[in-house]
Length: 330
Image 1: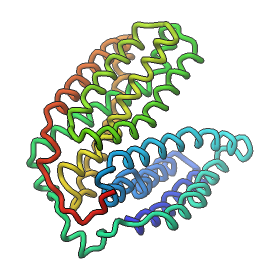
Image 2 (image 1 turned 45 degrees about the horizontal axis):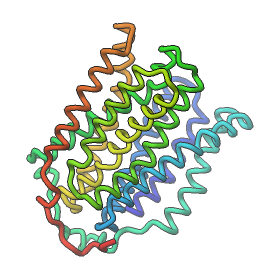
Image 3 (image 1 turned 45 degrees about the vertical axis):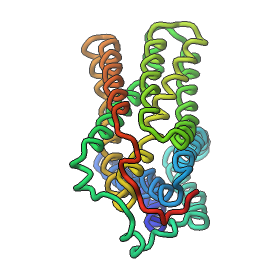
């Protein structure tokens, strides 16, 4: 993973820098397609592969730190950095500046501090326990996870993308709406660590189900209340839901199916989730254009989250699969 991510960092930076040379619509599509491909190399899937190889007893906690603290910090700092770049160098220069940051910050950190788990050589990997992707596809557990997490992530992401327009449409000020969105975002980042820590202490899949229902409560509260404190509570509850979505997937996949073929299994599931997260907000907009309100979309999202919670609550305990012990027991 280390060598792949180092190469991916450079390729991703180069593709981002190419945006500064964009001349027409064709080049726009081609460059952004390239960004999509290269961004998948140094992505969350690869980081989780390294983490699940290093950590066992505290796996959930460190998956949460990498996902929540890492993504949360980046999401907070990057817009400020880009705003300053645009003000100084224009949008073309901003893309060059982003590429420079990817290399100057990302590459040294990866090169100096990222190391594959001790058993990550080819010979040692051959001895890892784990199911193949063909075997995994035949299990009900796999499809329950795919449907539950994909449906839940798509639903909550659609809400996240529409928090501001939904509130402004009800007469809430833009300042309050953006504060609710910021609360949603910060709780999402922080709770990935929280749910990971919780799974380390209570290693049962059903522990995640109540947080899906918390999302529904937050959604109802956001739709029915105009009181600022209650709207903040709504953002907090929905952040618990999205943080849970992001936090449980790598933990579930590694515990149920082992590490030997973790890469292809997690990569496939993440791919389906990303597609769903791209489509769901569009469908929510489409429903609004047809009906003139978000009510039908919200009701559908609530039903989807109930289905997700039910599927998670009915998963078998993690100890249905036992992995070999050569991993460090951190």
